[in-house]
Length: 205
Image 1 (spheres, rainbow, N blue to C red):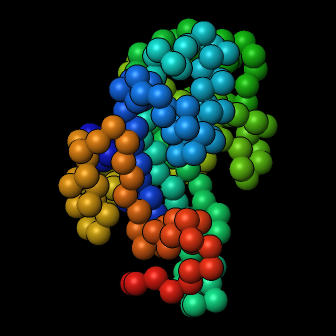
Image 2 (spheres, helix red, strand yellow):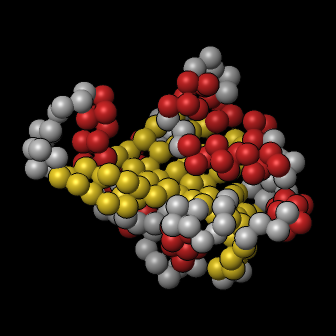
């Protein structure tokens, strides 16, 4: 619940994966390809470059999607056409040595409160991702605007996901029930249904 409470209030999808447990199953490769966000793979590459082995040092992953834009389907229902991501990885990290490596590589950085955010790209592009270490067991990654919200939630100046009266009760009910799970709001549910069954525009409210 403490980790869930870090996320911004208004998200469209929240998901969780117990990677330590999932790696034991033959379907893990498929899970990683089909469900885990592609942005997480970028994050893994950066961790590996700093000497952190994601396969042994990242135990759990939680992430949320926030619609960047919404469109109307032929049936007049709203579905997201783009989204931004914010994620939190739990494991065993060495923030000091990793940050020293990234600084040596002269990655673009940004200071938000007392955290140093490292950029995945130039740090100036609208789709550039950032990451930072909250502590030796917790790292966050995602689009800068959402990371700034996460930090504001952590400092108590902005409401977090625990204050989302519609989504959090569903998350709280689902949490702990499986190795991998996800909770979606109606817009993201419609998008998922359309991906499974193309052509479906009418979906119950």
